[in-house]
Image (cartoon, rainbow, N blue to C red; front, side, top):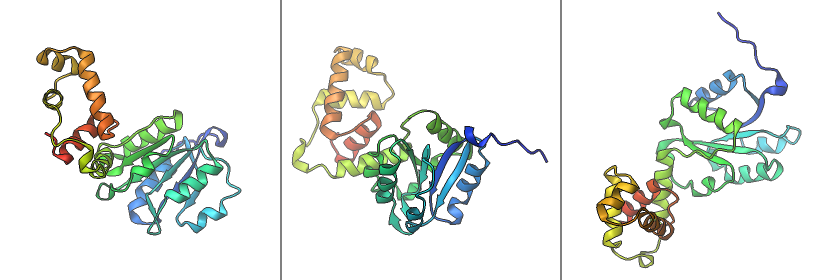
Length: 223
């Protein structure tokens, strides 16, 4: 059996894991312990355990579950980040529990990934990317869940029953796979006008991406 030498401790990135000690997380723990670039400096399985990690050195990244011992992890994350404000956060969620994540996605330097969307190799690449640079990564299913929740929270009177016809045609064109330039040519308008209309819709519906905008429009029945 081949034994790979581990990287020297001083070159490995410190990681704090906040997750239940159950079979669902066993594969993630195994993956993290196998990564030679990572050193798990604390493995917190309960909220109470967090009160006993004062002597732990500042982590580079915190990998967390949204729930710990049945309670939200959000307050614990904020408490730890107030102590180590330079740490990045990677929240790992189950696709079946992708609701109520808006506050998590607002944490600075955080990523929110759905492990159902990722192979172990893809998850490892995401972890390494988060360790190397302040990238913000959000799984498609998480973005969709957040967009749906945001759309549902918009009061009915805050938008018209239908979006303008030109905006609707632009969205239909984008949904069909056309580029913004192709939509502009088809509609006989400038690319800048297309981009302005999209930006106005995103601002109106509080959608941070085209994907989120499409989900919001669908959820609100605006087309």
